[in-house]
Image (cartoon, rainbow, N blue to C red):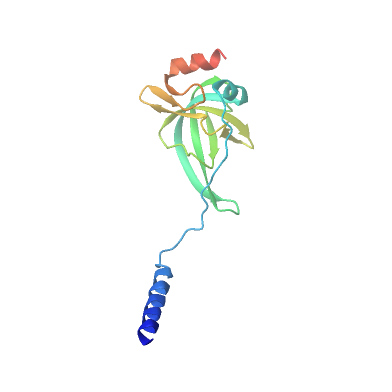
Length: 156
C-alpha cells in the first residue's frame, strides 16, 4: 500500500512539473487570417481601381486594433500604371496578411479606401522574380513577362 502511495505522489509531482510554464514569455498577438474570394484575371481587372507595376520603398509593421493584429503599411513607388490613375508617384499599401517585402518589385491589382490602397484579393499581388512575374491567379497561373501581362490586362 505504501509503495502505491509513493508512486502516486511521484507521478503527481512529475505531472505538476510538466504542466508548469517554462518561464518563456508567451505572445498574445493573434495571427491574422482572411477568407479571400478567388477571382479570375478578368474579375480582378474588373474589381481593381489601379493595376500597376510597383517598387516597395519601405515597410512599417505595427500592431493595431483591440485584437492586437499585425498590419503593414508599405510605401510603393509606381513604376508604371497599366490601368487606372494613381494619386501621385507614390502610394501607401495597407496589409494585414501576405506582406510585401522592402526593395522588391510587384504587379498589383489594387482598390483604394480611406487614403490607402488594398489588394483586390490574396493573389492580386504578383512578385517579380528575375524578368518574370509569378501568378497564382485562377486560370492564369505561371510565369509571365511584363509585356505578356500588360497585353493580357489591356485586352480584357
